[in-house]
Image (cartoon, rainbow, N blue to C red; front, side, top):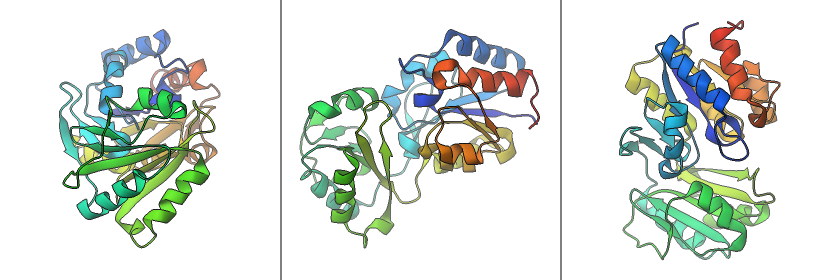
Length: 274
């Protein structure tokens, strides 16, 4: 099978725990580009501003899927190609509820990141994922791309209850446990149907590719929709059980043991049966 697009998740997959790309993987990716006619991109929950530092290391040469599919961003200049925002009335309702939450909440627009308040427990994750937040109450006229709240799972579930199940049909939301900042979790609210998978589907059509020509590698539950839109998918030893159930290849190595490098070698250079 000839792949034309390689889609890489960042945290827990391509990045080691120290948030670096291994020299071995860098060499392999360069070898890939020297050997095959291949596009490489990132699909991440991070804002583009917090992912762009890895573009050179990973030799990204195709638009980036950022904020779990909310934005498709030009890898060469950081300009949005396409984004999906939440319905304005629903966005106002969610913003009002989140700004009453005692923990940290964020509202992201096309040009600004609003932060309700700094909390000590949320500082690390905000530094990793969000660019230049301002502690400010957003105006009602803003067009919101997505919202985040950081805290323990029980508190985040209460936010969903406050928003109300009658309006829940107007957006997509997920609660993700933090691997790096346990016991914190993240509540993420996006426009209905928006995910890494919808972002990949848009990118696939934009590049004129077939589903079978795409290889996706990820590790966490937000990569399930990504896998559903790829012809072939692989995960690591540290991958979520739900991903291991649907992956075509599960590396015996973790992200800290160069699992992505192992997958790339097996598929492209050792010609694993796929």
